[in-house]
Image (cartoon, rainbow, N blue to C red):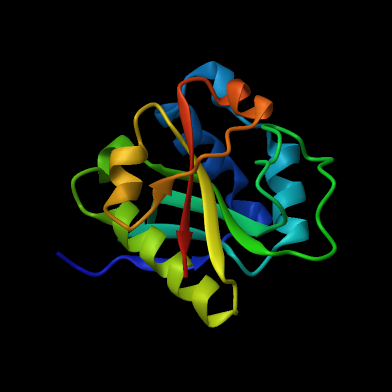
Length: 163
């Protein structure tokens, strides 16, 4: 198998992102193109696409964040923090055609390495639909703090990891 290519997401990738997202998530967890565009504008250097043979097969949206409360879902107008105290992994999705190739682990580890090199002390995420099993493999643990906004994510667990 050839090695996957990981690169920063650009606005021209949004149709691929929306296609992959719709193949991976139920309708209540879908975010729109405007929300993804806002995330790209806020944090252009820490959102990645993974491809094999030039075919986009997954993505990971991340951004700096502050505090224990996760950001609201599908909010392109989020109040981005001026002072971040953690790295937030917002959305990891792998196209069904790319499953079983370790693309999710590769992409997540790439992001965590980037965050550590950037000086973030902590990484945080919301694991949906029993994805906490996946994130535990990378050293994440469930937090004691659970916010009311977590309910919008459905069956979800707030998790973090010291970098």
